[in-house]
Length: 159
Image (cartoon, rainbow, N blue to C red; front, side, top):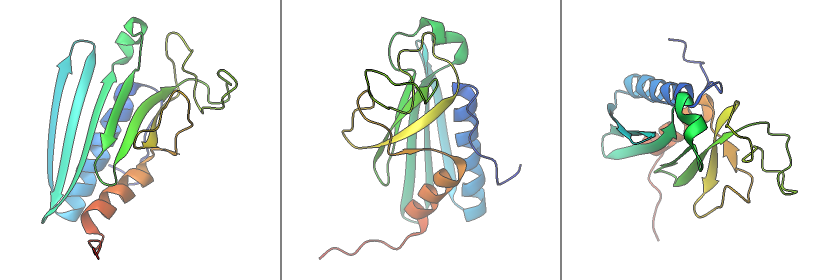
């Protein structure tokens, strides 16, 4: 596997598959433990990953709808969170150039059925993905950096 691989945007399941692959690869390179749980809940698929090194931990949880079930969805097609730093995630879709209610969101929530590109938007806690643009779009390099920061950065000093 090429370490430079990013996160594809062609389908929800491919974004998640690559996120899992990147984290497994990074865990192996760091000598960290990698735990992954996957399950199906109605139309949704759920993935929980924990990477642990010494006493440091990185968690990511994702809930998403498979491409074949997208025409059946009426709400969000995916969301999740990263533990450290705490970031909320939303699976965004559609043409990022579309204005929605005069907002430049970076995605098109009005697109029915949802179509590519599919990108995981990162939001600070308590941000509203329907009214705010994402702080960042998750890509392979950023995911690797978030993992390494959580596991390898020196602990912050409390006063």
